Image (cartoon, rainbow, N blue to C red; front, top):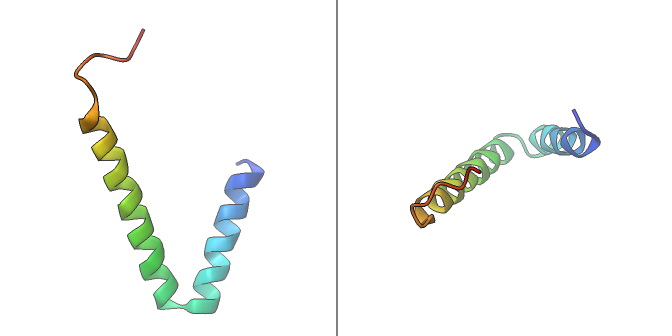
Length: 52
């Protein structure tokens, strides 16, 4: 695990500890938004295979 990932995990844990359920809900919504962005990026492709 890199230091950046460790930093994100620690901050998420701290947010949950301080803010409680609200932080958990916000983290879930943020994760869902990232998934939606990823799916839209996949759909936006021009139909060509990007592998070499």
